[in-house]
Amino acid sequence: MTSDVPTPAFYKGKFYVLDGGKKILSCLEPKTGKVLWTGELGGKTKFESSPTVADDKVYCINFWGEVYVAKANTDKFELLGMNEMGNGSKPNGNAASVRASISVSASSLFIRTQDKLYRVGK
Image 1 (spheres, rainbow, N blue to C red):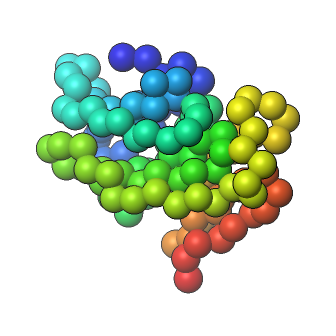
Image 2 (cartoon, rainbow, N blue to C red):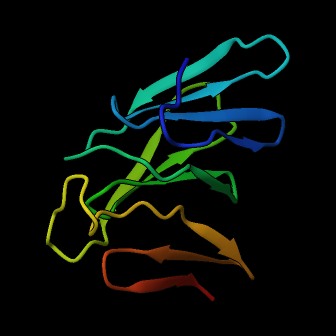
């Protein structure tokens, strides 16, 4: 199991590992290293930002600003949705690529894309 560039997230006793090049998200049991589930996120380009976990959801954003949301703490991979948040420039590994991880504060998600900062929440 490799995460390439993204740092794995730890949430409610499980690790969430994102292989950014293969666009695969996995859930692991820390004590044994057992893979509980693995799923393909898809998308048009790779991920270098780290996954963020909050409110039983795993959030991942790729170079283009596509945000993928998967369900956390389940027995199987479940992709809940995808939103295109980028500006349309579609960089693929240059200075305009999205590399910032999604942040959580005060019941809100903060998503930085190529040219905007979004707050999603109350």
